[in-house]
Length: 510
Image: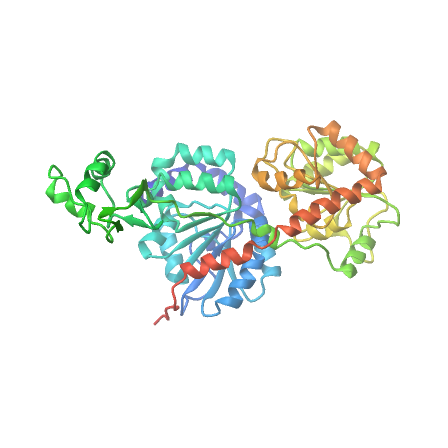
């Protein structure tokens, strides 16, 4: 199977290589980490085994910080290695993870993956949220390395695509040892994907009277499973006073090993106690959202004062922060700013959009300044819109805000993480398109802890109302903050799962 994925990747690479070569020459993010992604990782081959944690970008990396800290404390015998895909995540890792080995993740080519495995010698792989790279996963399965999908979520769109390509991706689904999902909806989707994987699909399970399960010793062929399902009553009737379920005479003798029980059935008064027949239950759990455990309800007051002075925010002046915004939202925000009459700090989701946002502000006649140009000696002009073009300061910016709009939600993008400003007690708004954060949105709306608006006009009306009504702002912020901070506690569940997947003792290299 790996050759099929390799051929697909190489064909796609041949088609896009002219474009990629041009982008690599002109755009920094396409050059970043390329040698590492080809297997040239910047540290030695592991002497012992490692725990390999992959967090694709900034959001996943920040959410994994409590887990990274706990792993280093609980399992010092394993070296922790963190990988990522984006340049911004690399910058965060350099600043936030001192003493932790980190690098760009490998391309999903079998020989590159094999080189990574040889260098890292992983005892466990932890994938944050959902990263289904077939060669990674199938190599892990062949090497006997357990894989934990942590803080898992599967968006509506991703779920449809995974189902569409399930026959091709089924081996990758089966290579995941446990799917630890953020909520029940995502857990149900993970169970559906697991059911498509041969590893979980082809074993037949019978539920016994004590609630335990009796399982076939090896994978069953389709014919064997059909025999079990069609003739279960016949088998059980013939099994009275015996220690195992007999085989029907019509079954192919060469296939009898497929029906060999892993252990005997339970018998009560001479009859086998079987309450159900099913395929193997998927290794899926609703383990909660690790992002809640990484939330902070407050920030350093001294740093807050520093940023307030840096941005020239005067006493009584109201600040609107628009975080993780996308094209289509930038235009709406710039259009409403003159009518709102507040200071604004804009945080485009993608750095390559800064230039277009600056152009919008200039055409609208609004003064602006880049955060990177500011210092204690050169603070922002008092009326300027501030563009946050630095990495790792979004939480501090949210803490300064009176009202927050979280982008990716007025357009059909699926939303961005609204938990961070809410946890800081900020009056937070978002649009109707939040499919990627359904559980968080549901929790917040249940307690009136955030506001959902349907379009830009309603967004402007609600911002205007909240800016004028401090009591409404504070009530909205307090309700959301209390709900999210009370939802923390997933970390302990994840650590228990990891403890069960790791070998009892780390292997030592030569």
